Length: 68
Image 1 (cartoon, rainbow, N blue to C red):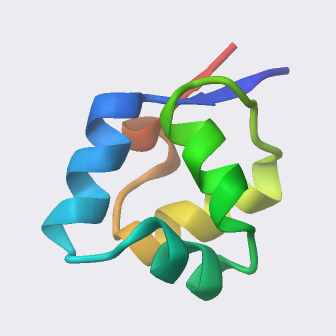
Image 2 (image 1 turned 180 degrees about the horizontal axis):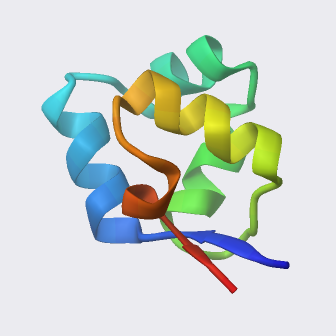
């Protein structure tokens, strides 16, 4: 199973909440470089990290990620 960020929705939500990549990374325990790769759909994410990101961003996993 691959979980890939829906780039536009992911970035839009982060920015709506006024979070930088670094702030989102800090709140989720991920690196800002990893967040950058996710936003450009260059890296897949594990289920645990997808859940943490969804909680911080206040959206369902399915709203922020493609699950293949």
